[in-house]
Image 1 (cartoon, rainbow, N blue to C red):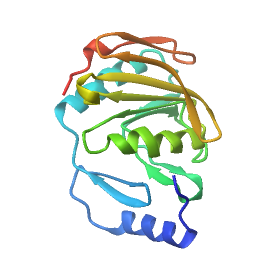
Image 2: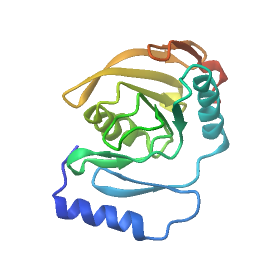
Image 3: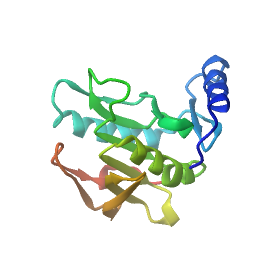
Length: 182
């Protein structure tokens, strides 16, 4: 992921904040570009809802599960709005969430697998769950962890229909058969 010069970064951030975008769209800075995604489809929303319900049962009351949390990667590497981020409610802007979840779409899969993977690791997000209902016709869930030097280690990868275990501080099993495919 390229680091943008400060002036270029500031211009992108200003453009993102000041332009008028269609209601419900997600506007991020990914790969040095302002990326505008349409509102998610119902299958995407249902997946995020299932995860959010599961996580609220195991996270402390002073944590939240957010669908509109802006995360800025240092050095102009990106401004992301993950599909779901779990973080303490009183977190400081520089504090990384404990878990970030992205549900890939056909057009955004590369960003989720490359740019955001590196960006979340650079932020020090301990766990990154990538759900890929479109992955080569074989939907998968991949849990990344142990961020170091801007990269992650794959902790577990399962096909949809199998269970995936989120480690501490969550200590919960995710039943991927609940996630819609396609």
